[in-house]
Image 1 (cartoon, rainbow, N blue to C red):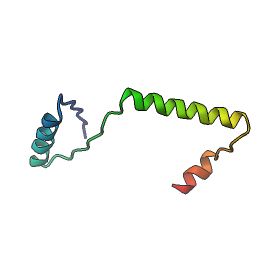
Image 2: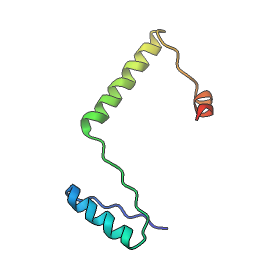
Image 3: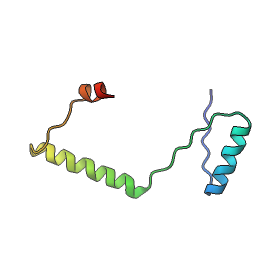
Length: 70
């Protein structure tokens, strides 16, 4: 199966494209783009958490236990 990425210029255009695809019985998935500010904030939070770990103020969970919780 092929994947097509469509980047509409407006929310109205997005709704029209989704309606068209659904009328053609084509599966659609919509992913909202994260803003630059949200991405930078996420990186900043990760850096703060890493700094706290390096200072010994917090304990991090290992990947195996984290995945086990999912």
